[in-house]
Image (cartoon, rainbow, N blue to C red; front, side, top):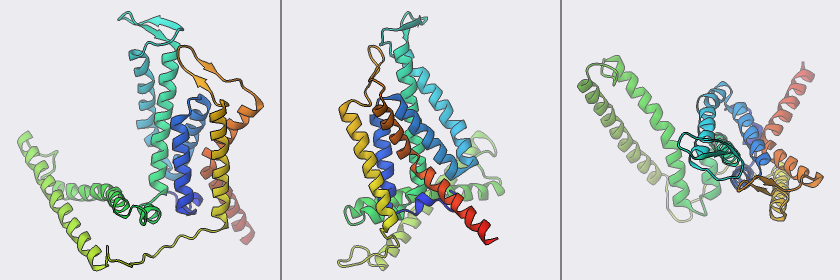
Length: 299
């Protein structure tokens, strides 16, 4: 992640609410325009956070997933009245099933990318800060689990490299030797995980976890900037929900594609949803330009 991500510096309540709203609207809105806007914003923000790594992830995994999901649906679903052709099995290939599969794939990829951005912005300490007093046990378990996965992968890489140096990697020797090497690495990792769990438990007990009246230190403060961001998110959520309820974002896939009337009001609803999705990226672009101007003035 970039060293200076402005949106990550906002209060955890603001960032968590943003991701919650964007994910909810992306999964629930049937209209293709919000789905495309959400995918574009998620892809842009993911590239901003992860750079070339994010681009490689999108091209190697997300693009094939998008194409595969778009092709699979019309092969199994034959609803719709607009028949394009007939498959070798005799079933019709309809335009409605193809479009539905395509935009369902857009939604799937957008949600995965948003969760990738969520993992980069919402760290475990932020999650514990938000839900530590409401659901302390669950928030602790979730934060420890999310932290354990990358830690386990890093330790597995270390153990694999060490075993490779002594010729006991899973890629060395015969099939039987490879199985034995894999079992050895698995045994090492299980032992490491158990030892790490015992050390964590001892550390928590030493620091007084679970004792009544124990306080927790927090570095997060809800300032004026967070209030403005929260008002913006609330306004966007109110407008999008209002448009959703009143039919301003109506869209039907079956039996034929049918959309609500395109008016300046519905176009404004879609633009506002796009502004909501692009909020983190716009904040970062503004902060980057402001930072460059400050450096130029200093020089």
